Each structure stands twice: as C-alpha cells, then as structure tokens.
Length: 550
Image 1 (cartoon, rainbow, N blue to C red):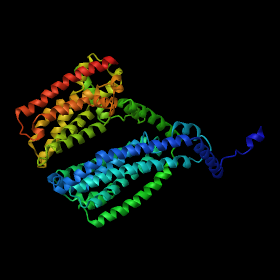
Image 2 (cartoon, helix red, strand yellow; image 1 turned 120 degrees about the horizontal axis):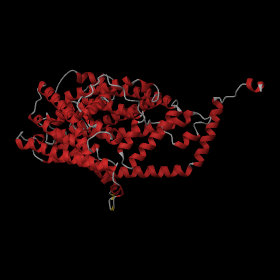
Image 3 (cartoon, rainbow, N blue to C red; image 1 turned 135 degrees about the horizontal axis):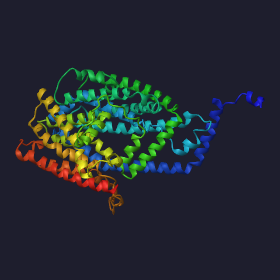
Image 4 (tube, helix red, strand yellow; image 1 turned 180 degrees about the horizontal axis):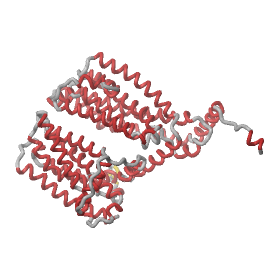
C-alpha cells in the first residue's frame, strides 16, 4: 500500500493526447459519415432556397432601387441627410452589431458543442483545441459571410442614394460588413471564455460598452438632424467601430480616399489580431461553460420552435447574474392604490437598461417627427419607435404574467391590475416625450407634429400591455392549414404574437393627422385618444382571458 501511494501518477502528455485525438476523430468521422452527408444535403438545400428567394425577391428590388437612383427619384433631401450623417451613423451601427454579438455569447457563444460531444469527448484525454477550434472557424465563416452580404447590399443601396460608383460602394459595404462580422465573432468567443467568471462580476464593462454605443448613436442623431460639427471627422477615427466604416464613408464622399485605404489596412490588422485572440480563446473555454450554454441553447431552440418567445426569454434570463440593487430606493407607498405603480417603478430602477432603451426609442420618435422636408412614410416610423419605448417601460407587466404568484395576493381582478400596470409606462413616456420635445425646441428643430405625442401615449402603452398579456400561442393557430404556399401555422402564430402593435399602429397610421404631415387639428388629436380607449378595453379583455387560463 505504501508503494502504491508513493508511486508517481502517470499523466497524459501532449503527444499521447494528440495520438488519442487523431484516433477518436477518425472514429467519429467514420461513424458519422451518413449523418454528415445528410447535413451537407440539408445545407445545400438551404443555400438553394436562399439563392432562389434572393433571385426572385431581392434582385428585382435592388435593380429597381438602382434605376430609381439613376433617375434621381431617390436623391433628395433625405438622401443627402443620410449620406452626410454616414461618418457618425455607420460607426454606431457597427459598434451595436459587434456588441450584440458579444452580448449573445453570455448565453450562447460561437463555440457550441452538442450534448453527445460534451458527454463523451470532453472527459477523454483528447486535445481541446482540435474539438473546439473547428466550431470557431465554422461560426466565423458563417457570421462573416452573412455580414458581408448584408454590407454589400447596404453599400449598393447607398450607391442608389448617390454614394459613388456601384462597384466601389458594394465593395466598401462588403468590407465593412465582413469586418464587423468577424470582429464580433472573435469578441464573442472571448466573452464566452469568461462568461461565468469575470464578466458576471464586472457589470461595469458591459455598461461602459453600451454607454459608448449610446454616445455614438447620439452623435449620429445630431448629424442626421442636420447638425454640422467637428465630430464627423473625429468619430471615424475614434476606435475600431470607425476604422471599419472608413472604406464605405470614403466611397460616399465623407472622407478622403486615402482615409478609406487606411481604414482597409487598419481593419486588416484588427481582423488578424481578433482572429488569433478568438482562436486562442476558443481552445480554452471551460467545459462547464460549454455544458451550460448547450442546455440553454436547446431550451431556447425548443421555445422558438413553439413560438413561445417568453419561455425563450426566461431561459436566457436564467443565465444572467442576479439583478443589482438600485442606488435609488423609492419609499414604500402609504396608499394601497399606489402599490402596483410602486412595484413597477422599483422593477425599472433595478433594471436600468429598460429606461435607457426607452429613452433612446423615444428620442428616435421625436427626431423622426422633426424631419419636415421628408416623405410621409418617414414620420410614420415614429409610431413603431414610440411603441418600442412603451414596450421597454411595460416590462414589469410581462414579469407579472410570467409568474402569476407575484399578483396572487393582490385584491384587484386581472382587468384592473393590467390597467394599473399602464400608469408607470404612460407617465414615463410622457416625461420622455416632453424632454425630447424640449431638446428639439432648444436645438431649433421644433415641428408642430410634436404636439400629437401626448395623445399617442394611451394607444402606445395599450399596445404594449396587450403584448405583455398575450399569453401562450393557441394550439389551433400553431396547427394551421395547408395551402399551395405552405402551412399557415407559423404566419398565424406570428400575427397573433404581434396583434397588439399591429392593430394600434395600423389604426393610428390610416387616419390623416399630424403624424402623416397634416396640420394639427381637433380631429387629428382626438383620433389617437379614441384608439387609446379601445386599446384600454382590449387590455382588460386580454388580461382577464390570459390570467383565467393560468
């Protein structure tokens, strides 16, 4: 026994692990030959369907856009304003895309293994790099290809607006998209590596990153509103988000040609460093992170197949760290009727990202209404922006419906409780719209269309509450019926999910009023209030039916 205890333990060195890895991977390739062939056929069929849809729908639209640009129908005040704001707007878009890819890696990173590989391969003496690096390569190629295609289309559309030659704008857009896609994938791999340790304890990193993105969007909004300032020359050189945008900005005339080539060179160096860092990070991802994210990905996938978006959101929320206590604490109300608004306000203070995004969408709605010399479709986009602001403030109502135990002991019926949940979103939206209108007036961008904003609040909040209380998709909608164009189930389920905003925004858009460019009048201001009253009635009916089913 003493001899056994003192005998050195034999460890698996690098050469033995490499030998085992080669044998294991060769055996897996032999066993999965049939499945691999089926997967190739499935990928080929998906690419064929994608190419067919692009050829039928995408190419004619792009050709029509090019002809409209050549005829001068797209080149007006709006096009000039968009192109002039490109040096600040494009870096904001790129930074948002990269940060969204990195944020997704907190629950599903680029390196994702199936459960069989996690159970049978990771515990074996095989090289982790040989298992994980191919997944990083596949994710990088896929994301970069999609981002390249999107960037090329965006560059071509900018050419239709007047941004240089079509081949230069398309190539610049493709380069910009490829840089954002690959850099976002590499950063996501780094986030995945530290998703269960440092990043969960260092929330200030994520908040600082989003604060930078918010500043970029603020500068872009100022440029889009017509402001001319020195930031249009500073932002493209302020960081990687601007370096990747320089080729397309140079094609559009917002920077010298030398700056565009410099952006290409700097972006190439950035991609090389990002690729090496991502590959090294992929080989060091802990097994516990891979297991956790594989389980979360399966739950999210199952929820999306059943179109249960709340269940998917709950699965993602379960991977996040606990909510940090707010530095501002509201005093407990002395009146019983203030309990629900107090709870909703407290919930929003503990999730500061919701009010921030609400402020961003409200500012976007105000900015769109301030664009006077534009087609009527541009101010109409303020309605979806206002709804998104209201939806952010209505998150406490969604939490109430996700867990019915939160309201089990409250003395109000479901209809009344749902309407009480609209107090805080309505008040918050009124404050945000008032601040946005004041800022627009201070900047000399006042428009009479802003007078309709208070009247829109009841309808927008009502649409958000209908979506919050929509419940689970009915089974008969999921089944659908077969038609020559396919099954109607998915389309019916999607329409059912978005029925609240579709009805509210559709009713607000069909009547001629200040949002559509008419002069503010009694009829134009009264109709949004009528829509808001109808949405309030619908909220009560939906809440009573949904909560009764639970």
